[in-house]
Length: 426
Image 1 (tube, helix red, strand yellow):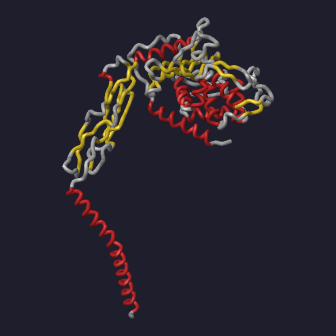
Image 2: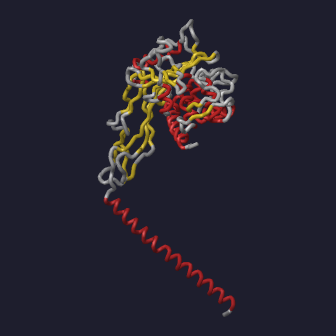
Image 3: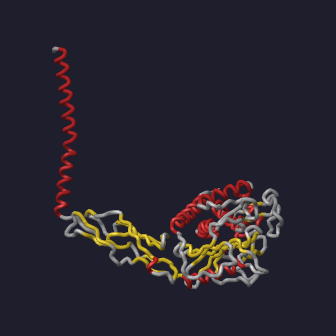
């Protein structure tokens, strides 16, 4: 199997998640949040500025439910280099699967793409188990891979027990961990394209419908949301209703809402209502606010040996904007300046980094950027002449030093020979 695509997938996903680990922050929202009394765990994330806009119980552990299939999908896309390849299903590959309604039965020839699509779109448990065995040989070995990959992504509170997410003792996750998994998957076009599809017809002729009711009108129209763009949904007794939904809202920005542990009220599945309320709330509650102006001088630094210049003005490297609550007072935003130098020595170019600005909301950093010199400064003629003289002196010294050392060595040798002759009396 060609491992290059798998390695590339892992590198891209790792870099994205690593970036997000260091960049996403949680805002203290002053705008009144939607009613979430029917939600056990909620997290709202802005893809635009990599910020958690709202969270409730996001560190509380809960059974992973269908979110475990997201990890199975991640490993399948990373490990299987050619999804057009087919496999012949054996009794070992389909062992333990309850039924073959998708056509995944003994001796059937199926494509890896159909298996992955069934997993992502239809939440098909048999597809998860088959893929686990294709990739790792057996379920236990695949679960070890799942847990290792979770650790790689920084999902410190997640433990998987099976590829399907069906309830099992000891299986847990958190909304924060599901966010990290979602970000890794959002870097993979194969996942985002399949997760956005409301239905698909498999090679077997079976038509599958998305279990994310935000996307489809075929199973139910009750939850359809025209702005939804994909991800995952499901239900188990221990996990409750789980929904990991992405949407592009009226402000043109993309958001991710994670709802875990939602409990049905009569025939209603509140996870969809909760997520929709938060999606629609975000554009009204938050606005892009410029917090750093590139054109505004911050400070002048002394310049040594400058050509007619003894100071240089320093500016922010770029304009910095952040998605902030619309009613957040300016007094709650603080700019903290961290300087790396106290002065500069000419010559230097425009744009030399001399420090950083940290935009703080309380104790949380919501943005940052470099502080740079607004212009370059050339070296003064006198300083340049001293440099030239110094270089000439250094060159002469470097030229003469070996000669002096050789002469000194010869003198020492001759002196030692004379002493030796005196001792022998010759």
